[in-house]
Length: 372
Image (cartoon, rainbow, N blue to C red; front, side, top):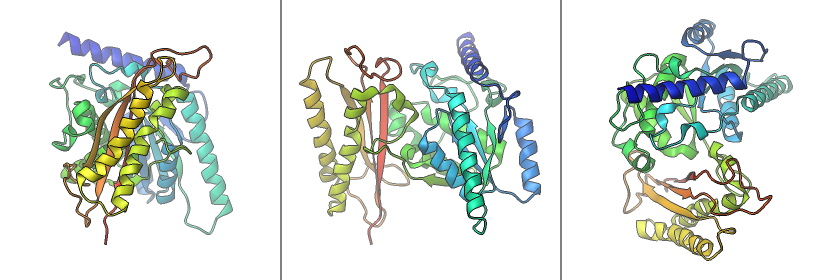
């Protein structure tokens, strides 16, 4: 018991210290409220409800990028008020995963949200006759103690805590490699839904398994929040935007595109009429095998090695692996690779945050739409 209580205490202290060190929400005026605890958020929600206003929730762990902003824009187009949560959830990290290395960029996050609120206000002024756009009304930035107020949660698979588990979906794909991840996701999302009482909540397609888990949870527990999915936002070269991309650096970023290119090769097979698993996944595997062989042929100061965790062709609702795609239902093609730390670097090389020493897990997916 002492071990997991100490682990939670260290996690909570780390999160609280990071938040306090990077922001001064009580002394600096914002265009939105910064809320740290549950009661003031519920007071705000009650006021909005009595005023017949609608609330869209965009849950994040901070380190905001254009993918997050696109979800906030979507929420603002469909609701009068948007609440953005920023919380690095400790229960999503396993005991062997480094919670402390997750990027925390409060000042940058706030600056981006302020700029977006200004953008939304300008759009409303320029198009006054269109449906009114909402705005970011509040940022919920709770401490770990606020989100886990009684029994400190454990990151161990069989650890103690109040958790929401959605199985068997949570055991597949990402869940096989990160056993507690979706338990943490479902738990924190349920907490946020209960705290905010949003009409709609917005998630990105990039984390496609997360969207399946959350949709199943909402259906099974009769949560009155509509789940909305925004498309994956990509860099110009196709790399899916992710908060962890800051760790890649130029060399690993270039090689990391192998996942997107592999998925696109498989997508081309499906578009050309292939429905069989072997034909579709073989196209993807040929891409990853070729690039890995190329990298293994280079020297330590030139290469960026990676490991393919999985490439999946699954049912869109159950995530069961498919031998043959049902053209009436389509499928989800997804994959994950692990970019290894750089073995050697050259002076002045762009190695990313962490000097190339942080392993980076990249995930991506493409949706195979049903055919007529």
